[in-house]
Length: 470
Figure (cartoon, rainbow, N blue to C red):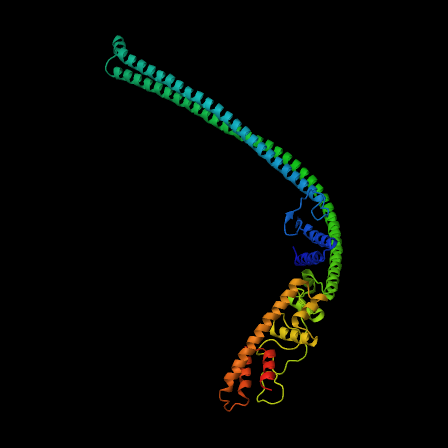
């Protein structure tokens, strides 16, 4: 959320509080709706009191602020989800196609290899047969040779040949045997070489068949992949077109909603300002009548002490409804005590004792009791009767208030008498001491000392001075 929108919500909250203090429910609702309109633009609601963060349903028609959501938001999500699902399906089709062609190639290679293995096994068995045939031929040649060796002497003897002829004949048998054996071995080798050539041909053919199967399989797989990818691209294009159109509608709707929300916000803000002004005027009116409430003080920026002072100055009563007796006569003098004695009246400031003899005094203070006595004396009656007259004319609220003020006067009068008695005792003590070189008589010094130490207030010190020194 931007800083500006944070400030807008804070302003609506202030307007809401002011309207609540004034009891203006319409203005409260207007401020709440204004804040909710700002929150809605960020996809959430603050709830009934604005303190929560509730996500707004993108598919719903209304949110908690009463402002319509963008109806195209749900459609955007639907198109996006359908596109993702289509992409997943095409990915699955690609995986399936690839697995299928891989398996087909494995099956073809396995079949070719099995056929080659069988053929090689047959050819290897032919090697064994050929070996057996040529071994038999070699054996038969040897037998023939040995038989010739055995028959040769008889044949030579019958022919009458001896000596060198015998050796020559024998050499012929050996030569003939070796020739036969050599021919047999050559035929064996040729036969075995032919079989090996066939084995190599079978292996080569299997490899060629596997290569052709792989090539054909790859071509088919590629055509399948291209078909699937083409369909996927067409589907993507269609979904992108749908999404683009939906997004365009979404932006238009969003701009409309923002304008509408801004309009609501401005109206709510204007109403909240009007509510604040109304609340201020109402609070000011109640203040002037002396009946301001706590919420009025908050609206006007006043404290309870400010209001109490205002009531005392304008209505003669405090914030609790107690009427304060106005003081009569006298005024506060300068600071401290003046040296010496004589016919001039002694003046004391309010720095030493606290209460003065001018303005309004707090209920129960010595100054209040003193001036109550003065007012009663001026009216020719007692303080208690004077208070009763105030009660009768409505300046004192209730019997309890009257009793409270009578009791306060009695306590203050007792305290004043005690103070005077102490001052009299001080006077006697001062009369027996030395005055020294300090200007002024001992009684004056005692009053000054009692005042400076806070044991006499300004009124008491001034009265004692009038009675004891002048």
